Length: 248
Image 1 (cartoon, helix red, strand yellow):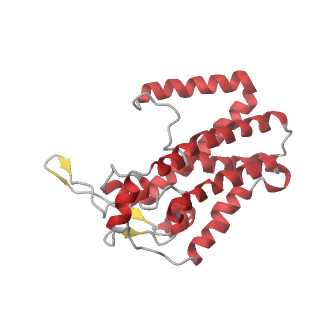
Image 2 (cartoon, one colour; image 1 turned 45 degrees about the vertical axis):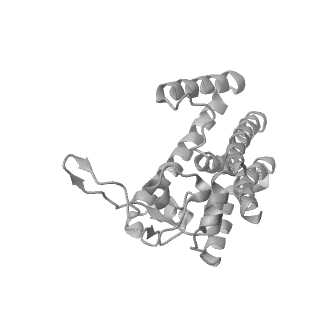
Image 3 (cartoon, helix red, strand yellow; image 1 turned 30 degrees about the horizontal axis):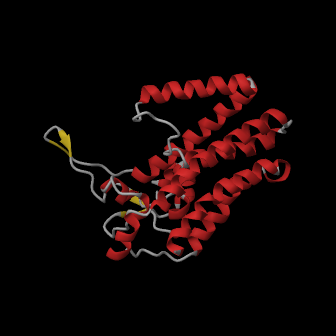
């Protein structure tokens, strides 16, 4: 039972973002401090559990719908936070530091970027049209200023997402033979084994197994000893990745 409920902690970052919006004058930066400060320190201090699921546990996990519900519930939560964020920007006269602090809402957008609200077979043309309609709707509802802030927030979110994509695949190459690349193996992406990071990011830190076996659900991803481990946890790797001499 506790193994199932541990994923309720993945809502910690959205909850912190809500607090940041509600207490904007004093706590607008709390999301950044939580992710790059408190959570990072906790990841370092806690011991690493690199044990994989037993065969019995794996069989129990594969068909449990509760894990799908944890994942799908994050979508309306994130969209709700986004609407609350836009409403706050429109109705509250923000100081510059408060506005910069609230851009940290981009953290939850990047963390949930793989959850599609609506996709129609995930065709990019349909998604692009949908995004354009959303932007038009935001402009008509909230005005140009709010739309501009949203675009800045999306830009920050994209930078965070691409930074994660960079660090988890950095420097690992596949051989190119006979007009095609070799099959992706456990050695072609970086992992970071830590219970907190695994929960808060839907097991994204098990990146090696995610690439190696792409058709399994997040709660079933396993650690493999032959895959490569990042020297720092995700926030630390993201920061050092912006300074190439340190990251290399």
